[in-house]
Image 1 (cartoon, rainbow, N blue to C red):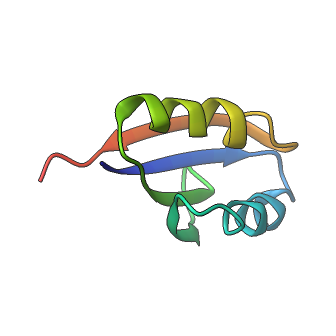
Image 2 (cartoon, rainbow, N blue to C red; image 1 turned 135 degrees about the vertical axis):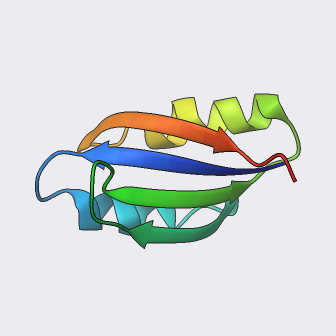
Length: 75
C-alpha cells in the first residue's frame, strides 16, 4: 500500500527529519515542503498494520516531530 505522510516539525528540525526518513526501506521519497506541513514522505508498505507501525515507531518518536497526517493512496 502507498501512502503520503505529512509532518510538521519544530522550527529548524526539518532537515534532520528529512535525512532520518531517507534511511528507511519503506520510504520511496521524501521532500521538504513549504506551508502548513514541513516534510512530505511517500512510503510503501505491505499492509495497513505495517504502515501504522512505521508511523508509530519510526516517525512520531523522532526529535522535532510535532504532528503527522497520513494520506493513503486510493488509486
